[in-house]
Image (cartoon, rainbow, N blue to C red; front, side, top):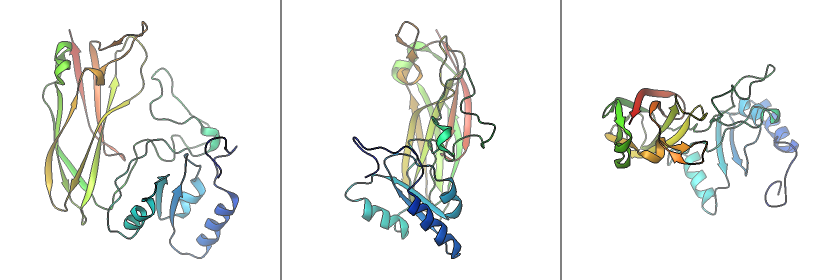
Length: 247
């Protein structure tokens, strides 16, 4: 064990023997699929560059081997998205997606900017088309939020050659808070399994808690002001829209 209760490592690099194994395999010219069984994000920049496939499995549990085998051999498509950001270098820590809007976080003059893989990143064996994004209205009364009145609707179609699950992530950005907030915050997601060639109409709903925060008096409040809503598939932003809350 190199991590766990009472056990830790000073470095985030994989053990030297594993890095040597990857280097040796790469010299053969063979295609490499790397599977990471891990209790933490590792610095995998060198290994990632030599791999044609990369699976981050964390600790997958008793049925993890079976699940991984079904994914590796194409019986099912992966649909997971990262719950943490993966750094490029141990010196890049901490690295996280929701830093405070008061400063540009984690920039280094001698390192490519941003994490190697950001929070929320995830790929599929299939492909999906999202279209006809819509919001029920652009302005809301604060009293309306108790009913969860902010409704975003969209269509998604499985355009690939395999049945698979898609995940749409909804972030918010508060542009006028009286207390500095994060550059963006994940507030909702929608995961839907689709057979190849099929499409479905879906909705994401925000309520008062989704748009509230702890103010300087440590009260959990929703304030009037402007918000940006951002929809992402984990790889790129698909749609964003401005809304306004008013008294």
